[in-house]
Amino acid sequence: MTTHYDFIAIGSGPAGKRASIQAAKLGKSVLLIEKNPVVGGVSVHTGTIPSKTLRETVLFLSGWRQRGIYGRSYKVKENITAEDLTQRLQSTLSHEVEIIQHQLMRNNVEILHGHARFKDEHTLTVEDSEGTMVDYSADNFLICVGTKTRRPENIPFNGDSIIDSDEIINMRRIPKKLLVVGGGVIGMEYATIFKALDIEVTILESNDYILSFVDREIVEEFIHHLRDCNISLRFADELKSIETRDDGKVICRLKSGKSLLVDTVMFAAGRQGVTGPDDLALETVGVETDHRGRITVNENYQTNIPHIYAAGDVIGFPSLASTSLEQGRAAACHAFGTEVHSQPELFPYGIFSVPEISMVGLTEKECNEKGISYEIGIALFRETARGQIIGLREGMLKMLFSIETQKLLGVHIVGEGATELVHIGQAVIALGGTLDYFVQTVFNYPTLAEAYKVAALDAYNRMNF
Ligand SMILES: Cc1cc2nc3c(=O)[nH]c(=O)nc-3n(C[C@H](O)[C@H](O)[C@H](O)COP(=O)(O)OP(=O)(O)OC[C@H]3O[C@@H](n4cnc5c(N)ncnc54)[C@H](O)[C@@H]3O)c2cc1C
Image 1 (cartoon, rainbow, N blue to C red):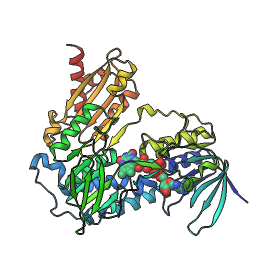
Image 2 (cartoon, protein in one colour):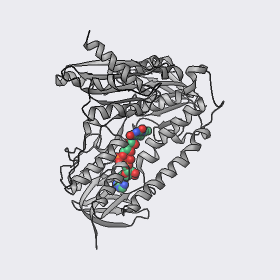
Image 3 (cartoon, protein in one colour):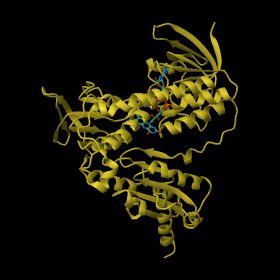
Image 4 (tube, protein in one colour):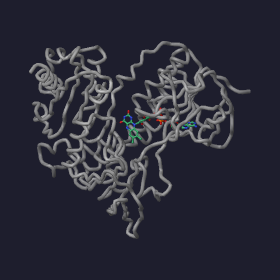
């Protein structure tokens, strides 16, 4: 007999975890299916947590944060090894898995390890590691299977010198020269993290721009920083061929005719939904995907089959752990008729490059498209007392205010602590705050948050010339 549930989530990443707990809190019977032997998804095992743990380790061991004061050659540890970098990973990851497992158990979410595929609109067949198949049915489903790295067929990946971004956390040696293919968020994060180890880093991007969804001025400031620390940027160029020499080094020939000799090539050239025919058998139920395996959903996260929801990276941008959590919660609430006040327009975006980038609300481009007249205010971190004390050379906070209402419309930050600082702006936007709030409010001094006041005064001066 098929076991029946109110709600089944496929995938135990942030979306599946939060959705399952939400559905269980609503008193529903919930099954969470995960094909890996451990829960947590990309977020815990190959994406968010490993990359951020690696980032902290590198920034600490390299002494990066102190270099503005003690000079570029300052280091906390000489000869940093691959083991130094991975040591902290294992304990952080197992701690995360334990927390997630405990949260799920506490909330009576049943966990099943196996590969789920649709059999019909209300039934999944789950194959366990021994190949045993069992059917499970439900009233509602959430597809939150995430993404996998895109691995172009003509690239001879070998898990050592030619790797994708999932493999970089297991690297056995630190390269002297690294080529990062792809100037997206993941490429930028890893390129700048490895640059902090003083290795030669080149970024290859087929477009003539990077981070197209980020405010242009912020990207320019970021690029200025990349060049300042000698990251080599090759825009509007592509790999033509790639081969490994006998000594293990990799020769990369580019379409422009240039060649690069590096120790490691890391591909960060996009991810695609885990929704192929053998992944989920979506074709049996008619849930549609695009050319990158992403599922289209409506504002309630319903697919074209109303009781089958999708959330997280599998539905595309913004593809963040933070937003996946919230999408999962919203989907579960909608499935059981519970009202939810989710505000996707106020989701912050964080890029943990070195330096960080973060933003919330509207960009200048969006204001122009919507016909909103706005004024900007800018603060440079090095002009704040805190920036001077901690030796910041780079960093900028930019705010957009409506000229008509003086309301804060958007905040864009590049620099130390950007991903934390952005939440001040997020709260003010959500509460409908205006320029006056920043001008009249006292901030702790000396802090980087003071940049909000400086930027607000700059906007005030621009509006009242
Ligand atoms: C390098 C990197 C760095 C990142 N850094 C950040 C960051 O700093 N901040 C941030 O917010 N986000 C970050 N992200 C993004 C974040 O990891 C993802 O947004 C998040 O993990 C997506 O969650 P999800 O719920 O969609 O599922 P995922 O975490 O992708 O997990 C999906 C799960 O589904 C399982 N699954 C797939 N198919 C099946 C099936 N058929 N049956 C059963 N189980 C299945 C998989 O095994 C997997 O465990 C990063 C991503 C990467 C790759």
